[in-house]
Image (cartoon, rainbow, N blue to C red; front, side):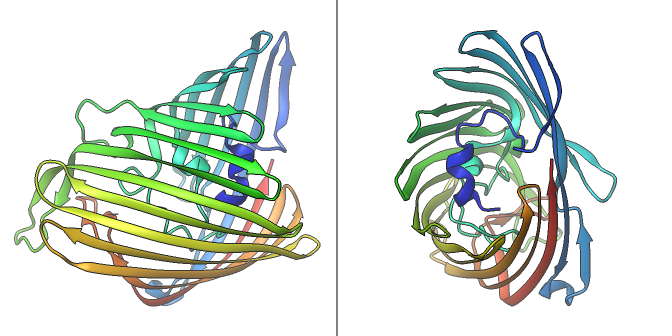
Amino acid sequence: MKKTLLSLAIAATAVAGSVNAAEIYNQDGGSIDFYGQLRTEMKFLDADDYSADLDTGSSRTGVNAAYNVAEGFDVIANLELGVNTDDDVNVRNHLFGFATDYGTVTFGKSLISSDDVGGTDYSYFFGGSGNLYDTLNGAWNDSRIKYQLDLGNWWVNATYGLNDDSGTNTANGDLAEAFVGAKYGDLAFHFGGGKNRVHALAVKVPGSNPERTVNMDVSNTYYEATAMYDILENLQVSGTYYGSELKNEDGSGKIESNAASVGAYWTFMEKTSLYAGYEYTKSKAKDVSDESVDLTNTFVGLEYKFSNWARVFAEAGFQDGETLGFTDVNNIGTGAYSADSETNFGLGARFYW
């Protein structure tokens, strides 16, 4: 949520955490902080005939550790666990690294740089359709090296992924991306891009009977530019352009997509904010066919913050159209999505520590 608002603040943050984290150890140059997020949400979706769906909304908890080796040089680590309603506990972050005056380097599993930076998306539920970086890997990498540098007004965030031997794990595919951002007065911006590749992704052959699958060598090349402007102390507007090319590296066939997103976040009363966004994505197939489709996505929401550690929110979204892609053996659409004039609603609450 609110990647645009948070991107400059977290761009050089080495590991996940919270401003409300509780320090549970601090001795002999070492420290350990305990943090977490309790997320509760209820959705009423058009596709489910608006039946109530109560979920955890990706609650998580974790620890950050740091040890000061010398002035300007720390050893750092992070372990974060996700907690879901089906009693499943999964490892979200597993990181080890070094923080210096010349930047921070971490090794392990986490979200990638493009998700750290984000694009224009103020939503909790129904936004983000115009951000095209996560088509193949869902914005995760299990074995990545990330470099982050904060130069005050300027920052750098880059990730390199070490590919999996079998080439079938989407979270261990080839990955290289880099982003640069800056803030001058009321204006902030960032730009960059990357390429993700999975060498043997099992996908369904459309129209095959009986159903047949093939392994495809697929890549996603993406690039973006985002600008944010604080018109007033309590009003921010932003816009993002995203482009991508989903390509069959073994033969012909590619899908080119272009997306534009705009949004605004307005704190019109103390602790109370209104946010909204509009996203338009156009996809066009090339080489194999000349099919062209588009998707329109809009949302509006209301948020109330009790403090920096607790908030509640309500949101409505509308989608119509489709994007192009393919479907893997787990029935997960890679780049492919469709909605027929669907209106959805969501309520949620979050508690941070």
